[in-house]
Length: 190
Image 1 (spheres, rainbow, N blue to C red):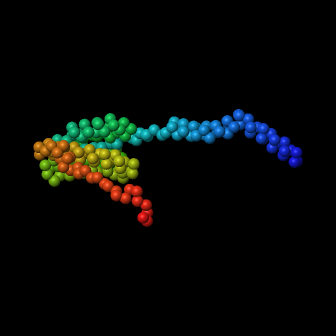
Image 2 (image 1 turned 90 degrees about the vertical axis):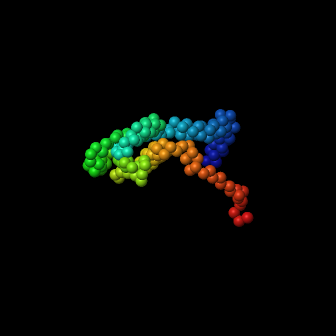
Image 3 (image 1 turned 180 degrees about the vertical axis):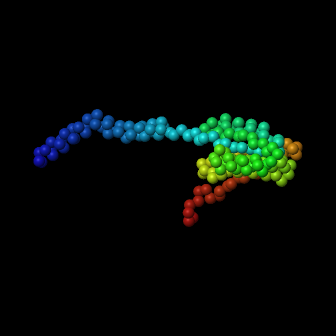
């Protein structure tokens, strides 16, 4: 048995001295690293397309429909995998009936969002009413984008109505803040 172990040891030492063995030992980590690199690079999941979000809007101001349509056309161009389909739902003579119909469509899943823009939204204390039914957590970002776009449209229209410069309003509203940390290189306890 001892002779067998000595022969195996001698064969191993002779094999370990060869260039092929040394090269294979050094190349193994490099090959594993390359495989991991390319596997991550080629297996990146693509952004899954979510079904289009259906939004109905009742514009009681009768002034914002074109801006809303243009704004969401821009949004859809920038987000082809997460489109927002906006449809106008005119109030006609009976706003209550239209709202109830829209709420029923929300409950049945035919609509994701129903928005009512009050008549005095531009020149008075009117509101944007944003209805949804059992929203999914994944929809929070899209809901935020819809709300932001509506706020921007109303703000722009109010600026135009009151003959205010939107640029000036933004300059007044945005206050630069510089944060300076005097203890950048401080160590705990010193």
